[in-house]
Image (cartoon, rainbow, N blue to C red; front, side):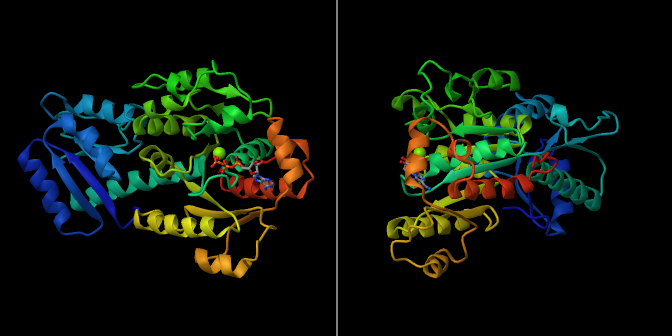
Length: 380
Ligand SMILES: Nc1ncnc2c1ncn2[C@@H]1O[C@H](COP(=O)(O)OP(=O)(O)OP(=O)(O)O)[C@@H](O)[C@H]1O
Ligand SMILES: [Mg+2]
């Protein structure tokens, strides 16, 4: 993951002298890493999706099938949410306009200092907006049946009770766990009813299911075989719009680490990794934690929640902490009677029995997440 000392840059530039100028400026510094220069605008969106740069620089005067202004528009509509710096010349002045996908403008000739400063600025600006305005939390576990859906649902409701506008996304695309939990009829729209290419805020509002508990839910498709119709691109685009509409988004993810699950995990700010006092669950959680580290997820991104924390099955807290390499961030106790009954009624237990220990535990998780949601009014 990028830090302020390492900015990964992708450039769309078809004038060799200009790309050489940029290369020269970057060759004498270490803060920006130039990934690649594309002379053909039609390849840039796909390359951006693959290479995941922190910033894309586009020459406004780029020629060819996809010209500069079109490319800027395509990048904006791609849902990738990567800032774009537009390069221009004094004869073609241009103003910064984030709504049109222009996060900053650099006018030739510019110095190395200006170049690096501009790139660093747009990147930190995007990061602070992403981490400040809306928290996206993926509830995940590499083991089934540990309580992901239960925790995701009750966490989303608790966030909304704290005054944080919250969306819940049913990422368990094959089985649609939330659809089943809430007994939502099959004809209620799902993520698949969003237009494939140009999802807009209004489209999303039309397909969200409003749960009586006060949260908006984007459901999974009603049938197992429909899950594979949901693409990585749909996921990225949907989450980037949900970020604009809500202060928090909670995602119930499936156990399998597919491309689409990884898209959920990539796009979120916090992975709430659910673990229980069960040997295989701990083993898989450690293994996946190592995989997360190797793909660049920071330790701050991954939070551990011990579910049924009072059912230790002979494993001590210290042993669990040693296996995970740190103390878990949260604990939620077991309450078979309340949780199972509430789930069977499609009711959040935090509403059915707010004073129960299990409800207080989930509210504590919500309060921590809400505390990081800048500007969220917290009702006491
Ligand atoms: N803290 C808890 N106390 C008691 N029962 C719980 C608790 N958390 C979850 N459960 C129960 O555990 C079962 C599995 O929960 P849930 O369906 O939420 O898990 P999951 O991880 O989403 O499963 P899957 O992998 O199938 O998606 C349910 O019957 C639920 O009621
Ligand atoms: Mg589930």
